[in-house]
Length: 407
Image (cartoon, rainbow, N blue to C red; front, side):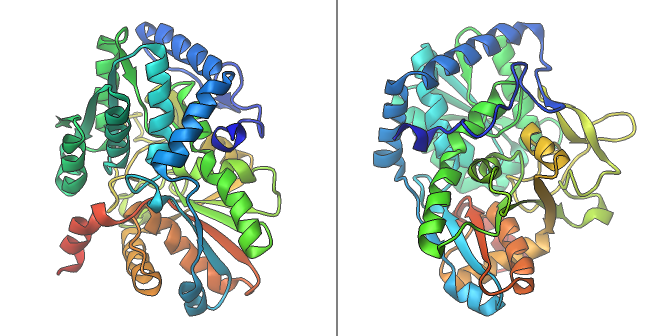
């Protein structure tokens, strides 16, 4: 079962310095370098140890509920009248999202390293819930940083984290969203680096985090690649996933990187539209998004003419991040992946359409990917296959949706 849960054989990236082409690397205070070196060494030892793979595989099967299924969205496909749409059901994983995959992997690594105090950041709350869940299981101390804007719009997940024994630490600085939660978590780590493990939730940050998170999330694509061939009799014509920091998307894309006939499509948060400048579409608005440094890595960053980080907007608390994981920047530069965006309005429409046609309430993050599938499917032949990563379920977003659509 080893290769199913951590797959790294498809690429030699990042290189030894942590770069995906010209993106990635380490841009952090000197005090953190020894901790990153320790983490990189511990991770290399872990993935060379069959017992680590066995323990993770056992937990993924017996606790997370893997493999998650692929579902054929028959009524949605019939309604759109084009390509056949399949959904990779990460919403059915324990805690309701893909985040548990990485939380369990890093949690086991922290325990192996003897770290008892775990810190994490969260936006939509699913990484916080996944981390709190894994730490409750493993018996480790858990602290989660979360912006007060996100706390307000994700109350169910805040309560879940507290119920699971985690301390939720409100962040009141900046835009009070994910970016600022990461800032505070990194400050904590710098202060307590000897005793603390930073369980970063997305495929960003300084090396080795983008690589490590990708590896722990690669189970999504490995499972889906086998499942879609069994169900549809072919590889998908396109894989579609939403992209905030980029963990669910890179987890899906990784297994299909060498399949030239499969297009990889990432969907960013278009917010109120590009013209409004109230969005988080890093690749769609290159007037304000260009290569820069944020949270220890080089990637595309939304910034003003003075290099100051711009505020973002998305109806989805998990997508309003001003940068993107460095491997996504590399895939785009190499023209292996294509990135588009969906507005708040389009995501809300997709949220409702899937609920009514398939009886599945998707997360608002996943609804951005669904919006692209809804646009694209009618333009494709009926024997085409679209595989959408349904990265999470929508229970956490009902308060937000009720506030917009009314009761």
